Image (cartoon, one colour):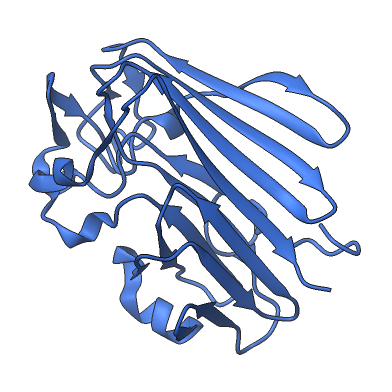
Length: 238
């Protein structure tokens, strides 16, 4: 919020059913690959955008202006799939690596900083996407990227695949106010909406629709040390 105005899309309003979520350890759909994703430790059962969103966060600390949440996963532990059976044939999802995923919020004079720390086994493959949704107030919002302007109509026309904005670390949503999203570690964005009143501006490490679903593993990064950090900074112009 800024000046008593809410800029994040809220549950229960038309559009997406959440305000934000994470896509980990994969981004993108897997139904055409029978929900199988290749790893060095064999096939992992993953539904769209990975299993992290099916797990519950535990709050591990908080102050007046910050809060830290955590999810821990033990390799090969079955995680119930909320899309089963209506939208998926897989009742449980799993991943062949241990990891801890930490999400931190820090509110300061410049805006909101959200950071993600991934701790796990060295060499673990992963993709990471952050999936926040922003309210739209005017009838003609514009997404401003380096050397490119994108209208809401263009994003709507792409549909479920989401529109890629590659090799990009900073994007601005120009609406009633200008909201700027700056990132560290991601390198790309994708844009998605199906309605006129909100848009998802998603920092991603890999655009999954660039490959067939059975080749999703080609977009993996790998933990080179035991920890990897990603940052998203959201600010509202005066």
